[in-house]
Amino acid sequence: MLSKPLALLLLWSTFGATLSFAFPSLSGVADGFQDLSARWGKDKPNHDVRLVQNPPTPPGPPRYTGTKLVNDRQHPWKPVKAGDIRGPCPALNTLANHGYIPRNGVASPSEIVNAVQEGLNSNNNIGLKTRRTGPSPPPPAEAGGLNVHGTFEGDASLTRGDASFGDNHNFNQTLFNKFTDFSNRYGGGFYDITVAGELRYSLIQDSISTNPNFTLKNIGYIVAYSISALPINFFVDGRRTDGKLSIPDARSFFKYGKFPRDFYRAAQPVANEGTDKVFLAHPVMPGGNADGKVNNYVLDPTSADFNNVCRAYESVVAQVQELYPNPTGLLRKNLIKNLQYLYIGAQDYDSLNLVVPFDLLSSLDTV
Ligand code: HEM
Ligand SMILES: *[C@@H]1O[C@H](CO)[C@@H](O)[C@H](O)[C@H]1NC(C)=O
Ligand SMILES: *[C@@H]1O[C@H](CO)[C@@H](O)[C@H](O)[C@H]1NC(C)=O
Image (tube, rainbow, N blue to C red; front, side):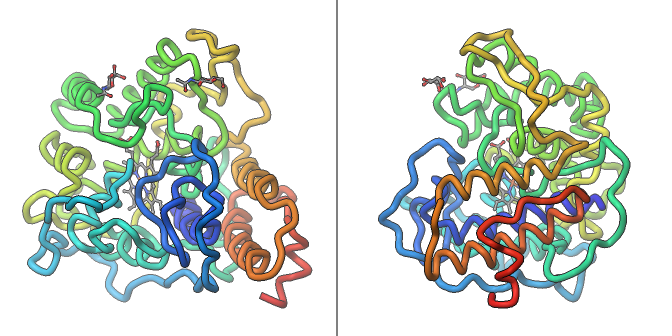
């Protein structure tokens, strides 16, 4: 079940690319490709972009899923060149800098799926036409995925500032200093799951007390908890079994987008395992600072949370429907096809009746 979150994330990438002019992150793209400079939900849609091709089925898992050297000779780190695009995600930046995805930072969803599998051993739970793999875990279950990495929101990130402060995607040294400080205080100099729980809570408190526009809802809420677990699962060398990320290795990923020397990927396919522990250390429910005032955190009982993950799916659907009240032709077809992937993945989270837009179900046979 822990794999579901990432599944949804990957689903999103399939999904997002189709909406190339719907989402700001994708505003520089055409033909189903997207760039890594995700600025979720902030900018206006770019209607100049050409409509995408027929979105392909998400790729399957690779044959070999054990650990292996990934910082190898075929994938040397190279510095970013003028015109290359990088974004807020240290994993994708690293994969681009090592050539697992195109170094210019413009990649198709399939390329991204393949790269996170090959370079980091993410699992392949992309929610193809499979049935659920088991019952949902009891609350508060993990979530994330699509939600992970705030498709639309990402306040209180680990090393990137809140959008309100003007830069939500570049590495911020002040925040990394805090990351280091917490690792020293709670993890004996390493970032581990205990540090993750303490740091997550403290970052939320920081945003509450400094960001009048702080919001921690729906996808952004689930993302905030999930990204805290990802560095442990993915950035710790696959030959280690202690779940401890050293500060130099963390800096390598977060700051330089670079695999540590001789880096081996995870020993088995992983996703956002541990998110539940991060949450349970200091549970904060979804909400935001109201009325543009700091220290005015008001809960939002309508938001997705770990008991109501399906609401994250619904918030995506609502946004899509807002953007495309009456899609036609190829756009409509691609929306249906990709929302179908999203829907199939989301079902694993929740037995609630999911919203099915654009007569999705009745169209399934035709896509
Ligand atoms: C193995 C797979 C991945 C890992 C280990 C990973 C790891 C991370 C981590 C640790 C962060 C937090 C950065 C910080 O707070 O300083 C992050 C942020 C982010 N990632 Fe990823 N990521 C993965 C895949 C992806 C994919 C496939 C996408 C999209 C296609 C993505 C999009 C994002 C975005 C948009 C953010 C910013 C979220 C925010 O603003 O809070 N990531 N990622
Ligand atoms: C905060 O939110 C208000 C109201 O939505 C908006 O007008 C303002 O530009 C935002 N401030 C920042 C710094 O994002
Ligand atoms: C980095 O983050 C800190 C803490 O949020 C903030 O005060 C500072 O302005 C940020 N620095 C940059 C260069 O954005």
